[in-house]
Structure formats: C-alpha cells, structure tokens
Image (tube, rainbow, N blue to C red; front, side, top):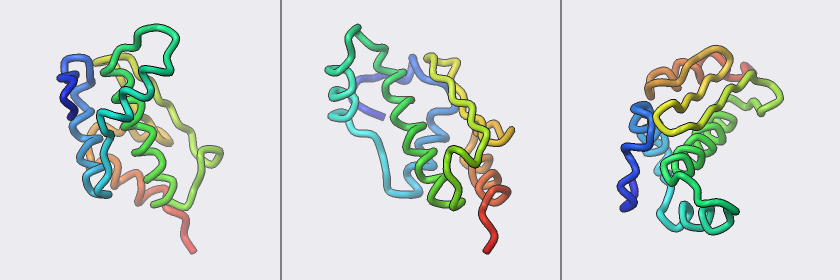
Length: 110
C-alpha cells in the first residue's frame, strides 16, 4: 500500500487484490494516485482512488488471462471505501484464489 496510509478507507478485500497484482509484478504507485486526485474536480477519497486503480489493473490482467474483454463478461465493480466489490460472471472476487478460479472458469478454450 502507499504512504498515504489509506487502508482504513479500503475494503478488507484490497489486500487480496494486491496479491493478484503482485503475481504480475504490478502495483499502483503514489504518483498515480496523486495524478488522479489532481484531475478531480472535488477532493477525492484517496482510498477510493487507490481501489479503483487496483481494480482496473486486476480487470486488465483478467482480460489478458482469459482472452475475453469487458463486453464478453458480466462485471459488477463498486468502489465505496470499505464497501468495495468486484464481481465477474457471478464470481465475487474476495481472494486471490477466487480470482484464479474465475480465470479458469472463463478462459477462452482454443
């Protein structure tokens, strides 16, 4: 997590989503959070900014892993501090294992 000390504004699932990014040697930098915050008209909740960026990355890796895109999937993404969720085709992605199970279930078979 970043130096902003934003875990209190994040879902308990965020640590699991960070594990997914770590698998890909990916993370969200403080500079990315600041860049997003600077572009915001109103003062954003930094935990929400962080989680939004994390979930965006998780989804991009999911698309690469499965060979599918957003239009092929039913995605529910909701960011609101500790009440943040990512659901892909009815898989509630609460853990890294949930993610990998969802990848396996949705991977395009060649």
